[in-house]
Length: 222
Image (tube, rainbow, N blue to C red; front, side):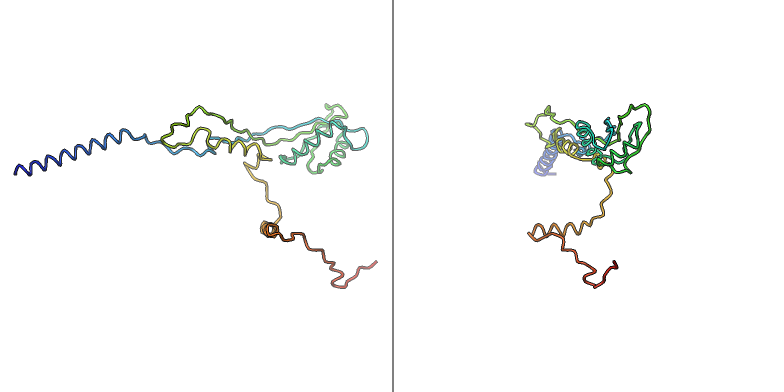
């Protein structure tokens, strides 16, 4: 082997060694592998729990009108039930017949009410209650993590928190986040067609009703 060939081999070995050292150094400086971050839906869950909603009202001695203060609280109770109620309202009273007349006259349907004749409730009082879902939202505002240095471009601790908190606060019935209400009988396609007309500035009013008897010439007996 000539001297020139020996020099070429020596240079190749040195180049290989230097390359291996460089790769080792770069690997040591690289950021450690991390697991994929969780979705902010999992980081900031909205917890759904159950609560008892109840009020006490005084049934009127006559008629179906509640006194002003009871009427105000009853209206809020009824509105809350319409939004979140998925079961019957339990009414504990010694005057169930009177209570039914008053409650139906003030907005409830008879099928929404379940009466418990209770001698323990002094007349003319009635206790109304139902079980509803409530949302426990996450607390936001954790700025303990520095935003000035983030070489991995990882989501900060607060990322997505406000979004989840707002959803939990504005949802009318938190139970919809567990199981949605059944759809109404309305046609989505028909609603879309009406919206297209509205957006185009067209008339969306229903056409005038046609008198079938006038069209057919049929008459009714008197």
